[in-house]
Image (cartoon, rainbow, N blue to C red; front, side, top):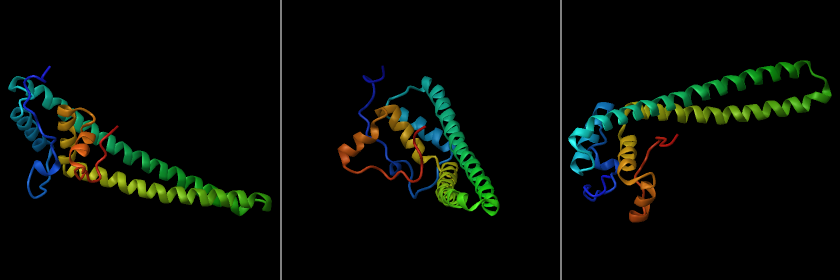
Length: 172
């Protein structure tokens, strides 16, 4: 529908938004989105409010997704710790023929806890980074709106190098 009226638009990169790596808040993201869509002729003034509301909902949804990741990882860690405590308790009262199996279970859970701790750190960092700066999310959102879901592959094929994405997760 908009294809005839849109100026040919370059794929937006993180460094094209603001200078000096200044963080972008939700309010700033909305303002940049409006300006970009008007500048390239993708949206008219009468359509902006509806699309800004969609962007706002996407930002809220993505933040909730990241919060859920943190919560789920915390729950997995707690379950593994509980299971580990149970196995260690069982180890003290088991028969010799059960000992090896329980020790293997303990080693397995300890390994899972190490992995879960790394996952927890990543999830927490992703959430903190997203709360601090919406820039990477905004770049993905605008490029997806204008160039489609495969915008990243278009960028790679045209420049042979993708923009730095940081620790932000872009899918659900």
